[in-house]
Image 1 (cartoon, rainbow, N blue to C red):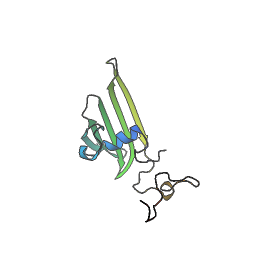
Image 2: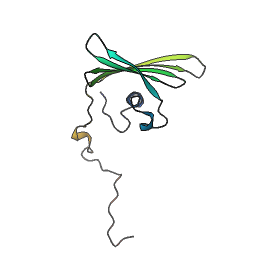
Image 3: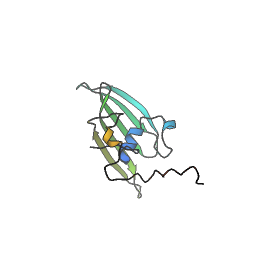
Length: 126
């Protein structure tokens, strides 16, 4: 289970969710991806495939039940420091994907102070 914050929870989640975004909507250090396919599976799910455009290759498949994201699968092929090709896969089952977080995730737990807020100055202070 992953509760997302500013970085979507971790490196894999950040990369996999950002892959769908156009390049002008993500940070410059994120890899560039392009949509390469889509279709329907015999189990009724539909999918959209993306592929990276960099030195290291990654293929990502997003599975949907209608318009609801249900799973993300990726396969990465990376050259290590010795020039050997290494493969890595990542499969994420999505239980819920909502743009509206629960209210308890938007406030600090009891007893924790917000150190980012500065006290207001009186009008007479400089």
